[in-house]
Image 1 (cartoon, rainbow, N blue to C red):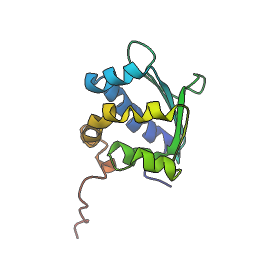
Image 2: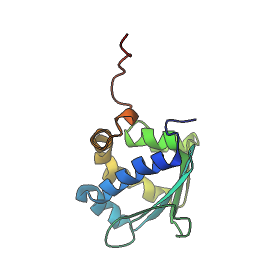
Image 3: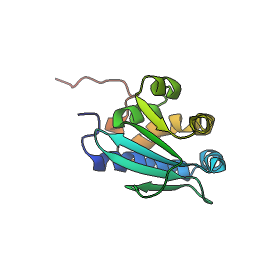
Length: 145
C-alpha cells in the first residue's frame, strides 16, 4: 500500500490541487494554450482524473472515463505525489516506465515550464488544507517519549 490509503483521500488531495492550479493564472493560462485533454490514470489506489484545457478555463473532472483524451498519463499515486513536489523527472520516469504516456509526448514535455510554479505550491497547499501528513518535504520528527 502506498502513501494514500484510499482513493477518496487521493481524490481529495490531488483534485483539490488541480483545481488550485486551474485557478492560478500563471499556470492555467499557459496550460489553456495547449488545448490538451489529459487523462491521469492513477493506481494504488485507483483514480482517474481528466484535466481539460480545450475550453475557456481549465476543467478538472475526477472519474471521467468517457471523455476522449489527447494524452493519457498512467502512474502510481505515489509517483504522482512525488512529481508535484518536483522530485520526479518526467523524462526519466517515462524511460523507467514509472509513468506511461500515450499521445503526443512532446506537447506534454512543453507543459513542464508552465507547471513549474506548482512544485512550490504543492507543499503549501497540503499544509493549508489539512493534508500536512502528506508533506514529504517536512523534516522527520521522531515521536517524543
